[in-house]
Image (cartoon, rainbow, N blue to C red):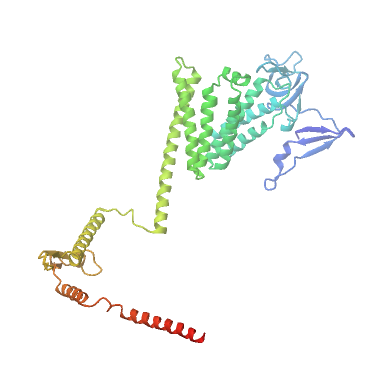
Amino acid sequence: GRGLVIRTRKSDGIKEVQLLEWESFANPAKPQQQPFMMYTSVDYPSVTPRVGDDAVCQYGRGMVTQISRASADGANSKGEPPALKYSIALSSWRLNGRSTVTCHVTSPPPRVVRKHTVSEMDAHEKVTLARSQKTKATNYFSQKKDYNLALTTYASAVDAVRNVQHDYTSTNEVRADLVMVMVTCSNNAATCCIKLEKWDEASKFAQNALILLDALYGKKGKKIHTLLNKEGTIDAKLFGEWRVKSYLVVARSCLEGGGVDDAIGILKKARDVAVGYIDEINKQTNSSKEGKASLKSLTSQVKVVRRLLVECSNKKKAAKKMEKRRAKAMFGGDKENTSPAKVNKNKEVKQQTRKVEEVEEKGRIGILAGSVISDNGVGVASDQDIEMPIHPSGSSNPKDEGVSPTSMKKAVSFCSRAPQVREIESSTEDEDESSPWYSEHKEAMIMLGVAGFSAVALMASRRSFR
């Protein structure tokens, strides 16, 4: 069957051929991990080239883009069919700018070779591969709605150019294309992750795009940035649309992960960036076609930012309510119960309690110090009556026990004269005036006399011994 010569051994000249058509005969239940190979010393002729094959002709290496007949008049003079003409886009040629070289070969026909692996490609070939992968992934995303396949293809495009090693063949155009394909494929892969609800992967892809954009913004005004602006990629698209798109993906990932405050901060950055470029475009008198397209895109992005900010605010409010409920369930309290009936009932209880306290205070003052003393020491009675509500024990409001307030009132009268107290006080004062002064200190004086007598006896005994 059809195959490709992978390599030729120098020791024995054996050719290692990969059989391409044998994969269709493999068992689907047990897929073949390694390719089907044939080892031969025969130098087989090349297979007929097809569109998309890598081929080598006398002018160089490239990819077959078109196959047609060399002559439109039909058979030649010998009666043979006209030869085939192969159009080959040469990848081995490098011209200034974005110019390419296409050669048309009839005889000898080009020889089909295997495609280079990613590790064998140079910077130009890697960027070309990534751009072709991006086109396929965009078709999977928009037309087929196959987000898994689109994510895989976008990721392969990013991986193809992730570790590009530039050399003398890397032109400014190649470098500019490298930046564009990495940023757009990273953002598009992040969008696929959002569709698939892979929030962590989406955030990583979007952050990679932001890193590239920040690096390009640091070299603003230099060759690559100037080249992109010249080719129609203006700053409003580079640092406006693409950056806001990355911010939105990161904010959405933070929001789904519970980082509401982080999402709000990122959304505010996105809003400031978008509004800044919108104002810049509006100040221009004659906006270009690219400027108008960016203005429309940025305006729609601002709406998305505002909607996400409202969603973040609602989530914060819901979180605060949940915290209050948890605190109430843990520590108790009835602070939130502020119904009108409850408030009125509490007010009535407080008023009744205050009245009772005032009445009790007045009664205490009237009993202890409320007497009016005349000049001759006789108290004058006060005939004022005070009505004090009396409630049953355990109830602060008579309405709660089914008893009317009027039936619970009791009249209490306070008199300022206390005869018994006055008589006791007067008899005590008379006794104090009639008793001598030493009656209260009789025991002390006896003890003092005994102590003096003992001292005198002690001194007399000492003299007698001498």
